[in-house]
Image (cartoon, rainbow, N blue to C red; front, side, top):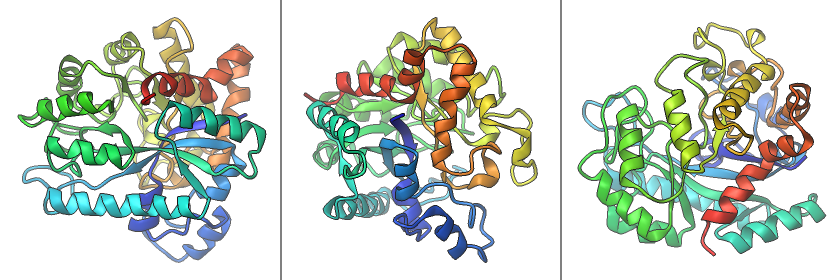
Length: 352
């Protein structure tokens, strides 16, 4: 079944980790076998593996944080450098486009044409992507939103870990900064979508109050099932549902399994069926199946040492369909989860 993945750090892997994403995933692992960095030799995601997993479209990120004084997040020295590095990541996607391997989806017509082409000729259709930004530091100021929009940027999260120029994020406490609201106003004027992922709780609700445009959460799970500030409370999930947003269920094991200790707990303790618990919880809060999809975050700084034991590569996301069916979801429900909810959302909120 066609799959849409709402969060993949493809260019980060290519540029920051010097990974050849055109390789077979097992060849990539072989080339990294002697590397000791976390995630090396355990990668899950390459372009051929995405095709094997029927990933027709993803939200593909650019990401470069600034190392602000007092923030626990490492990164660039300033926003000009962050902008330049993010533009380099965009250049990677443009090369993939020029070679016919990827295709940027910018608007509603492009989305409809791409999904139709993938259904009719999946083997010859490029892998589609909607350009997103994880943490808004590469947007130097509100005036630069227009330039990024022209580059195809459609989805932006304000912060990542620590805090950014615009908002407090994961492991930080606080709301929007003084620069946050002007950025959100410029994003609303341009037609951008806000990704609420990684926002600190106060910043989350500040953003919903300040921004009347469309919102989503590209990769988030449920705090009711796994405690911690990285997950959403039921109140936050209900707020996204009330705004007709969609939440992408994330595959990072510590967001699925309570008590996971990074680099100690082994994947054998968690399965994809545990992720289904988070999906079911979101559906129960919504009273329907319209507000959850996939946002895997696979290879987001880790590999299959930190995924469910039955998720060896991104192609294994296809296992979610029968698991959902086994929980009593209808074929239509499963299709909505695998791609339909994201298609509906972007068909409404990408520019006409």
